[in-house]
Image (cartoon, rainbow, N blue to C red; front, side, top):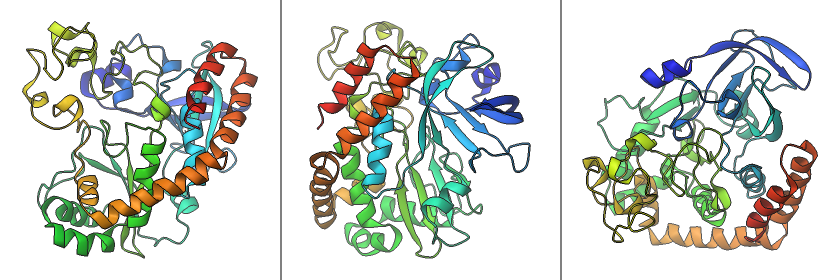
Length: 389
């Protein structure tokens, strides 16, 4: 499976025996999960450190654990995963769609156990839980990490950039949204976007991601988001996904910070993507490699030398800062005022209320009880999150 991924980028399903809480499931579907979190993977990578998707009913109809069938073993960027666990709690408190999550003792083929955060995958059952009043032909899209929000034409194939995770194979609503945010005038966007998008929810989403300092959201290097289109309201809701960089977490990959990426390196790149004259020097722009600030190394690929994006250069894989939906939204003064108000409301509801510290304290006790992480690390990583309160 790893060799296939290295050769082609394909993430094949394979059959496995999976034991969860003492219950043994045979012929379970498992596959690699993620994009940037798999940068640097080799056939020698420890499988217990990798991100996985586990689907109990992939091959056995009706297989489930407490009603759940589809799980994602998340890539850690911290040893405790406290930052992502707390962020998911706060998403729910903020009134935004979130995922159920548990800390787990995770091992593969008899390996030593690793502490890993396991979350509910976004699928049909997740839609039913979070959008119970939605129309039966609603659609859940996932923005792909290496995809684009660009307008390709009304008859173009958008499946390379957006995967359909639930609902019918219908890209028409998405095409209409992309057409507007890429091609519409400010006046057209102001008039039409509220008919296509839950504006209030999106304002709250953007304010939330800033509050928890998540650099890898819809406007970040991984295009991290889902788009849920409700066929009843005919509107999109942006759904948050991937918070392993929340509260200042650093990009890692392969389940931790051992992927060979320099500290602070955008997570959409493999070490081998870096020009040889700066593979060992850390961040470009004068941060550890002796380069003048703002100057890119020689030999950098041309698609990284354009304006915009991370480091002031257009990075591969949609590297942050130029999502057309975010750009269109933030160009509108009325909507930016909604975001400002949402930020104030979230400060009260999540920080001032003690919700953050309450969630953190609960998760700290869970991690301590695992016996898998030393107490000094737990305290250090918890204190980083606690500083936000």
